[in-house]
Image 1 (cartoon, each protein chain N blue to C red):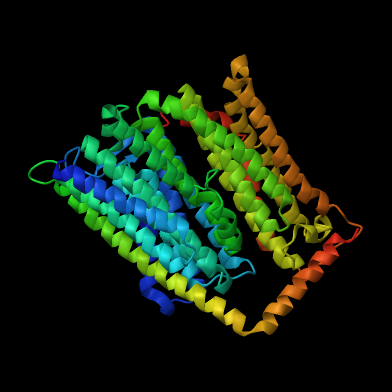
Image 2 (cartoon, rainbow over the protein chains, first blue to last red; image 1 turned 30 degrees about the vertical axis):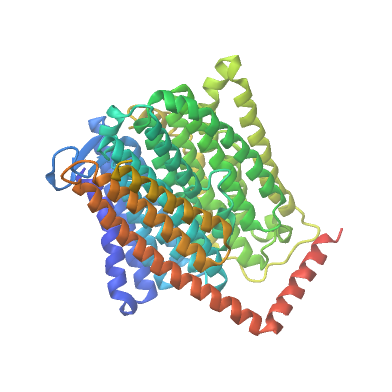
Length: 478
Length: 116
């Protein structure tokens, strides 16, 4: 647990120090400081992963030494240690990209990204509904500020994003108030022992679910996402799509797998799963039609979150522990792949001087590394073996294929796969159009392109440790 | 009707009023006020729920205070962002040259893309 607290407090302290230092620290030094603190946090997260693996169960901590029920509890589960590691890794990678590639970022980026790292770490470790609300607000405010970093053009999308994010948190807060009024407790573990499916609990859970779905941009509450994610600077888009939307999903999963009574979860599960299936197809079709590269990638996030929602819905409906594994494999595989897609898209945009998908003609020749990264990460989104996306899909499909009455769900996954393949191949096909090459404006930034490739290789590397990952996540996912 | 019920209904009414305002208006400042109204409704519900036992539940009071801090900082941030966005909007309309140039550029972009 100590390591988890270290991993959480290092980025928070770094954000504070960067803010206090302000202009006294040059942009470059601020960047180096943020990257180094992310690295330290990564190391601490690694040790806490080892701790949990050794203990083979969740570790609870009552903050301030108060007794159960009054204390705000933190919990380090195998899943949260893995997510801590994942978050720290993404911050290191995107920090290096933001600091050393040709497209610079402003000094505020470093403060905000450290704060984002801290709030995410706090979110993964919280086991208290109100504390989760606070981390959710922190996450939302930081994310909005990061979108606004893109400059004047982004102020309007940022303002809209902020208002939506506030509304979503308020819905969640209303649910928290109702739950506390009914049970007199906010602790996730204690609530799990008490909840019954009466009217108050039902309303509270539904209100919270609506708020969290809006925050996570799950269909049909996803319309704000493409504007916000596509307008942000490249490094920020990667953080937003790869990490930020996963926070509300974590809370949603916590609510329905632990707090909610089983019979209620079984009723709501199929609805969520169907919404996930629609998200897959609708998001994929929008991505297919999008004329702009970054919007295409943002819509692909909407579609891919459909898989996560489907896994969650089926987890609730069937109460199969295997679905925990599928859900979190999707989240991690998608996070890595999406980081690549946004970094590669940003690099190609700068090099080729166009925001349009059609401007990528001949990209396999002019920006080969970035295009290769895009295609490789796209392969994981489609679910080509042996990538992380394939691993997740395999775990999801297994119980569907084993009994014939579940085949309609498998059909949904198949449809989603086809649509994903369509929008990825659309980009790849245009990039092979070498007859009418769109000449690059500037020489490609080699470091940026190779950094974009790194998470794509890691997502394919996930298959190598696939067996261990599945075992780790299923051996006490909570 | 007990006092608790009255306040719960009032809180829910304020929340729904805010939600209605949010969905029905497009002006950013009005929407922000609507969001604040929703927040006020929730705080009312929480304070009313604190009175369900005697002496009143201090945990809910603490939650409301924390919630108020979050609401104030978020509102301040939102106001700054909205005014900045409005300034950008009016700035763009004051310089028609640049805007029209951008528009004609994107048109030529489209024309180029639709070429066989």
